[in-house]
Length: 126
Image (cartoon, rainbow, N blue to C red; front, side, top):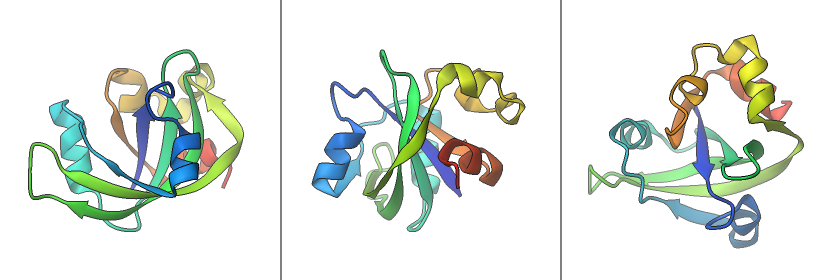
């Protein structure tokens, strides 16, 4: 499965992830987003999306492990991938038919969003 993870770049940016190599993705409180974190598996592909002023998909990562010990706050270890050659803005995403029914567009405040393979490919250019 593929997912998009939203982050405020002034708090934790994709550049921070690149510098650190890995991080624990936790602290998510929205029940739907927490459900998506619990569903992750090692090897799942991720798109990192900057919120705030940027509002764009900026890089990739991979799920390394999932610690479900606390079901209300699963800790997902992720590994940095690479920066996107062509970041995709929210306006581009909203304009694309691939995302018409996506929670990314329909539930704008959701911080963890499932992606299908075509959405992942379009966002990453892969």
